[in-house]
Length: 341
Ligand code: NAD
Ligand code: TDX
Image (tube, rainbow, N blue to C red; front, side, top):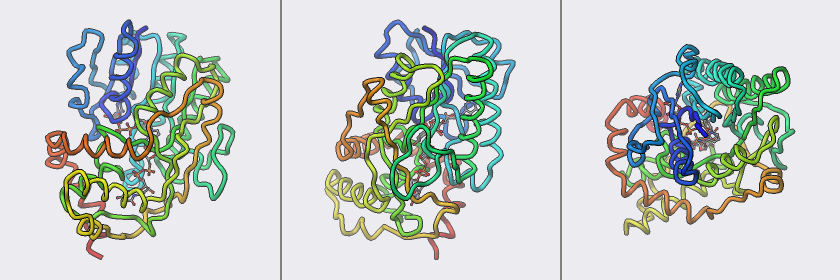
């Protein structure tokens, strides 16, 4: 089996590639990645010399390039993935997330091969109570979520129109090693380690449903091997938390691990202007994948968070390189004024 993994130099797909190579010794993996600001080949340093792994630097929007790649199944992780950036500039989100997905659908159709679209719970919008299941209406609220919902609808159209063997997964918020520091959990860890203000949007009571990245990777693998073509699978760990609780948990654990005063670190918490269109609550009902594909998450949240904090503490070179690059320009644009008020 030759898997084409797009966006393999990003957070979730780099974890997936490592997992796939170790759990399927007869598989080959081709990683197609454009290496945007979020793509980082250091995420794959430990496996780059494997003879079952190939890296191609390229854009999923480049149809010609796709024509020349042979594969049996494609897992489409490549995306512009950060909500705040989609508020600043939606264009790259429409280009990669919609047009790029269209290109990959065409490539999969030509080869009559399996297509797995890695999507997100954000396509469902926000829920006050209850949970998102696979037939909840799509009500995306950010340009990022709208671009992912659009790509999901395109996938659906290729299933209905062309009988493409495609499946869609919609997962909740991921955390774990190699996550780019623009996202909440690594941002809080790094700002706690570096004693910088920790920005909390709004009242800090927005709820996200968190899953450890390896549990997500195992769920994707289960869908690839046991899923029914044409189906959507929600993935989540039944782990809803208000942002402020997570921030306090990270501060307490970081203080404990580094033997620091947690009161001083708590003082870093800084409430800032809210994100525009900020979804109040995400909550995934994963009953379908649990029942039909016999998948369950294995990592308890406190254990996963401790493991993640320790990973960032032990991999300072990895994040120092990011902090010394273009990232700080984005960081200052996003937080500079907000942290002053
Ligand atoms: P990420 O931003 O860390 O990585 C995205 C990767 O895609 C990068 O390596 C980037 O270089 C690559 N890429 C971007 N545009 C490309 C293009 N045009 N062609 C080829 N490569 C391109 O993202 P992530 O957080 O790992 O998310 C991966 C996927 O999972 C995304 O589709 C996202 O929507 C979905 N998802 C993420 C989460 C989460 O919590 N992070 C939750 C559910 C679903
Ligand atoms: O500095 C911050 N302060 C803050 O309060 C940041 C970066 C975030 N937040 C809040 C906003 C959200 O309520 O924390 C929550 C999580 O924010 P993000 O890490 O940006 O994630 P979210 O917007 O929930 O989207 C994520 O989950 C679904 C991923 O980025 C998406 O790619 C995925 O589809």
